Image 1 (cartoon, rainbow, N blue to C red):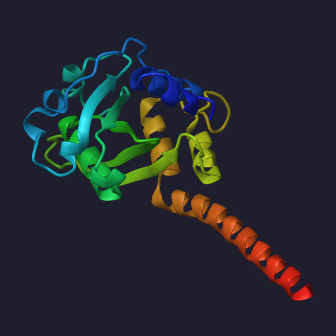
Image 2 (cartoon, rainbow, N blue to C red; image 1 turned 90 degrees about the vertical axis):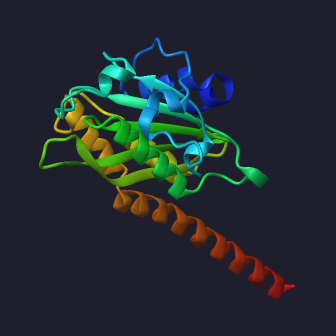
Length: 228
């Protein structure tokens, strides 16, 4: 992904915009000011929560709405909400855990009760992408938050081939049998690509290839040693 270099050379807001441009998903290009987590999460903000305490700044993207307007939409998914979340460093240079990223994803999706939220996390030299399953409530009081699909620890400097493959699959097309022409379709497409089964399949093939190479290199080295 050519846009990965932007995360090292640009502020977070334009870097995320460039990433989505490469995925053929246009975002509002006027985003430049960070929002503090307490201002966007409001009643859901818990500063003493282990996961939420990692949130530093948040950037809000949408084609049409402000963050306040997006919180009062209906459930037709007639738009896209993307958040870029800059995380604070953890002690001892530890990376955020899968559970912490999932918890942050859930709380932001609760704050936007009627429209899905896609999150791009930035921490250390990595990014992560998160999408949350949305389940309609019978009483029409917003939606429940289900499984969080997460692509974690995407290295910006040495990107794993499995991660690159998955990110390429996130790109959309507006023509042909796989065309994505609505925001509801975009949400379903991303959920499909970021599902656990997809990630497991794609990454396991890459891991198997690595282990195969490692095993054969080791076997060849032993063979050479035995010949000397």
